Image (cartoon, rainbow, N blue to C red; front, side, top):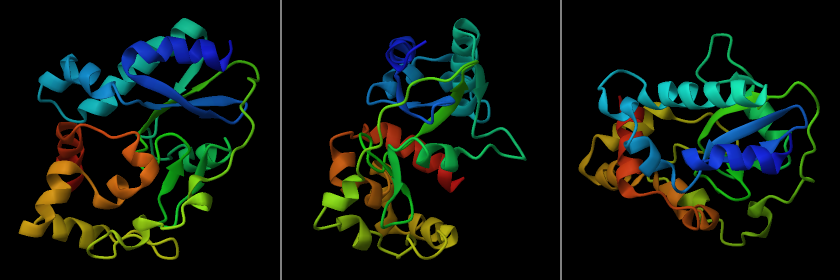
Length: 204
């Protein structure tokens, strides 16, 4: 099984190969995922955690199909070290905001699971963080409440409090301003409806 073959298997579901550490393949949403998910039973059944349930149904079936073991960020505790796995692929890096950045998705990262194969798989050579060639780095000053930093923990309470204010409507309806302002993210833009769905889930 090659990365190209896995890409072909996941693509019809609005998914993409985001990287591989040689042992497992990280699968995330691509630009067409929202239309696929919106047509799913999980989107319409009004039960909890629709995205996680959708991910487990789709990737669980694909794992059986290709003889792999599916692993998910939502499984735990203990939780699998998805951040470490992502950084080991050479396609993810820590951005100046503290969030991970991806060579294709920018800050619009949504890893839905990992497929661990029975044998090693060839991984693409490590690339260069897009932040290294981003001279303006607009993400650094984009957060209106300075909730994100590479040197401090994510201030979740400050972020959520801002979302409850009138000024927070922009982030609630269009998605996190920091994620949107990244030049790479802008080439991987999400529909506003999808961003609003995720922000509503995040705010709780």
